Image 1 (tube, rainbow, N blue to C red):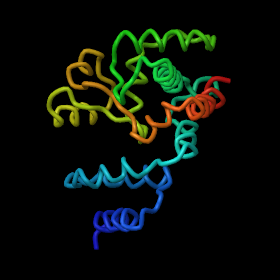
Image 2: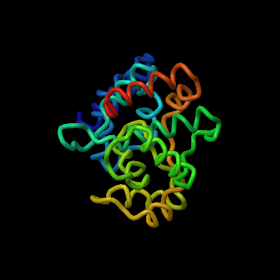
Image 3: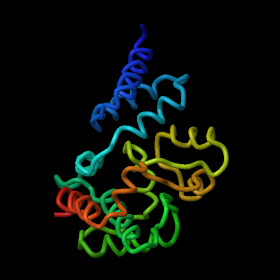
Image 4: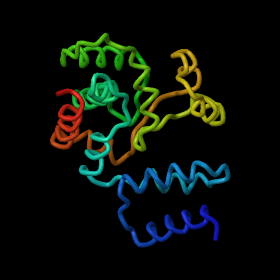
Length: 200
């Protein structure tokens, strides 16, 4: 049995018995399967849909964002964007699991950045919007052709905002995470994880 077949069998067993999958294991399997060009979309969908089922799983992922480090501290860009999204969900601006790269998110990001007196120049929101792609709960929807989006995602650097808008229709998060974001208590727990880890 090949490694690919073993991973697929593992997913099938976990789905069959409705076993929860830890975020670390889910991320590791996803990364491994992405190395195989012939992985069925359904297998990848299985990982995305079943990986994160509880608040604690998402809190763990929020605390463990892949970030750069400046003066010994984790860079807050992703955290500030996620806080902005939580706020926009909370005030009803974002009503569906769809995060557009537009003026609304840009203004919210800048305001959130300012509110924490980070002592750093406010960056463009499209930078964390793009680099959140490395997090298992963050996904992009293609503007037109999925293959064009796939090619852009394989780009080693970061594209211009114009390139992104031509290829990416919007971002979205795991459905389970979006459901949590719509609850005030859950939203507060997620926000606190971000603030405590990246903004204090």
